[in-house]
Image (cartoon, rainbow, N blue to C red; front, side):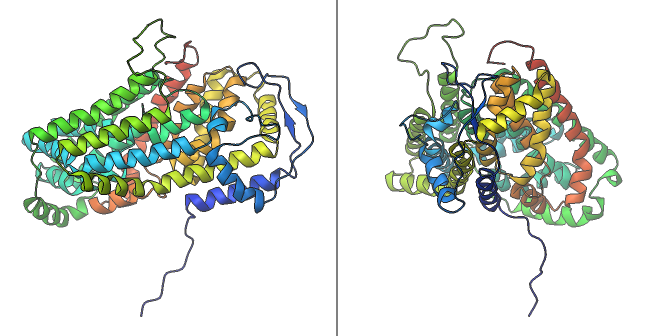
Length: 497
């Protein structure tokens, strides 16, 4: 009987967040309490901080209740809702429910086979033009990453994509890179990703449309850089197979993957599945349209068009499209309901993380130390320019992202502090959101605590050391890209950039 291997195992996001709740509860007994005066918009007025009577929090009773209160929203003793963050008003329940609905929507769409069939169609139709296949597939995966944070869904494609790339004369690493870097760069530049941009924007008190232009620039330029990087390596391997970073596994991988390719049951891209892809895209387009501040842009739109929507309306929107897609696929009422519930169940962990993470903010708010931390940060940032503030912010998110690989949990914990700090630095809050998701997305290209990375490498039979050696130059290029975009954004007025 083999002994179980003992050793350090990195704690889960839940454990880390519970530890944070305990630490913050202890801090309320040590850190002086204080508050800012608030403007008419409910934002802290710089220079108005003043000490108040402390309200220390109990670790067990208040700590556990903080999770519940963070989910439903918190309320002061006088009946008023606390502070300047819109997330404090609504709590996490609307965001968490939206996550569950998105899970059901994605589950129904994936069950139709439309996305699998679409990618298979691209792969087979470009046979003999594999260089273009790399570019198109990476762009497709990037769209998935930027719209709905495509991550675990990519695991279904590794076998097919790696096999096709090996058959084209490349290696397994090229196949892994097409999938992982394509979706990863898209997630890094999340334009409307509900699990990153949506959650972060909600708890920063801004809309998903704020900062959209900067994220589109990062998406387009970052994807082009990724395509160039992977294609350059692929052509080098094709010209000289010994240049492959996985050359020692060449014969073994060819035998394994090409055999799997021959046995692959490739789904057909039928007209019905084409309609499903169109409906899938339309759902996200409607969401984008609904959050753009048309009035601020001087554009009047009819009242019957979607506008000024937020998470309640988003949930209804994706629920509607989930049902429509199910009926277009002729799934049947019972199958639609079962598939939707199964998809929502898969997202339950994400929804719970949002609630637990919100508990950290509640403890700090009820303990009256949020403003004290902001005051300390305001003092430290006094005289610091917006460019330096923005770049320090994204560098700070790199180690935080390692500790909390869940983008939803990381946004929920940090935005109540980071968003008001942007106000003190006279930086638009949307830049903080973009800095958060860019840094988090960059780290998750190689993060060993991120299950998608380790799972994808295992499916592609690529070692983690080989992946790190391959990706680090690209990570530097992507870091420089979003650093430049964030720095330029400081000088551009308006919320859309």
